[in-house]
Each structure stands twice: as structure tokens, then as C-alpha cells.
Image 1 (tube, helix red, strand yellow):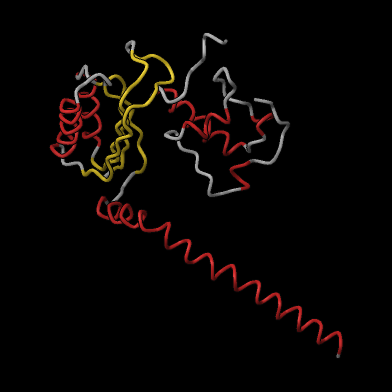
Image 2 (cartoon, helix red, strand yellow):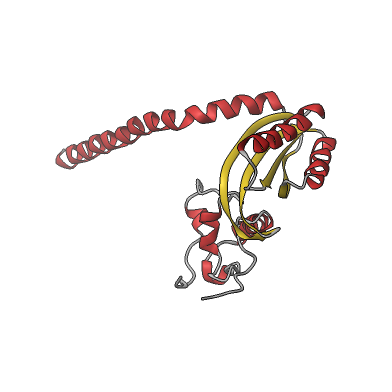
Length: 74
Length: 144
């Protein structure tokens, strides 16, 4: 996944876009292929939504919907 | 009453009957503690993001329910003791909710998508007509 430079916050642009820990497919867009959370300066999210997103990703990790890390990178 | 959401992963190698028994067991626990189940969702077998107790798959079950603080703690205690459950997590969604209102919303939510679509089409059509009229008026005023 290529890193895009800072853009506008997607969640501000489309207020209907939900941040839900039960939806790993969308959360995966905001993690690297190693499973790390993509920082705000790269994803372009606003502070408010990045905070919500971080909690959601961490919750998803807790229940095995998202990986903490991928130890074997092919 | 508080609204909670508990999500848990059940051993995928269980027989269908045993699985049903597990789900019903926890439903009963909520009801015994005077909790109200707003929504019970079963995702079926999903791949786990990492191995849990050496399983790489699991059956996800989600309960959305209302109750006092005792309900979630009792449910979590039983989830912990049951070795057919691989993982569980509870999230508090809201404080001071009315379960009846939530049940009503849940039913409305299912109908909503259709209603929205029918509303959108006329709403989109109206502004376009207005624009035409406005431009026509402008043209007239320019002529006048």
C-alpha cells in the first residue's frame, strides 16, 4: 500500500462514514501491512477522528479482527 | 440502564448443536440478570487475525443489550469460565438508556434504507427545477 501524502480528513469529508471496531475491512485502510496504525501526518485525518479511529483499531485487535503485528512478512 | 455490547469468539470445531447451546446459555445469563437483549448477531466462522488458543478461525457472536452494571460483569465471568469461548470483549455504548426505545429504533433501522432512497429522488429533482426558474428569471430581468 502506497503512502499518500497528507490530504483532508476522510471522516470529516463524509460524515456518514462510520468508525466501527466491528468493521476490520475499513480499519485496515488505516494500518500498514505490518499492522501498525498509520500516523495522522500521513493519513491526513483530523485529531478528533484519529483518536476515535485509534480506539477502534485497538478494540478490533483485542478481539482478533485485526493483527497486532504480522511477524512473518513474506 | 446502561447499554453494552459484548462480542465473543466461540471454538469453531464445535458441533452445530453445542454451538447453539453456548449461544443460548449466554442469552439466558443476560435475561436472568434482568438485562434486555436489543440485538443478537452471529457472524459465523471468521478467520482470526492471529492465532487464539492455537485456533486460526472462530465463530463470532455479538450481543447488544441493556442492563445494570451487574449484567456485564456476570456475563464476562461466565465467558471466562467457559472454555468453549476463545475470546470476549465488552464495550459500554451508552449510559441511561431506555431499552424499549432502542428496540423500536432497531426495527425502524431495518426499514430505513428504503425510505431514504424514496426521499432522495424528489429532493434532488426540486433544486434542479428551482435553478431553471431562477435562471429564467435572471434572463428576463436582463432583457427588461
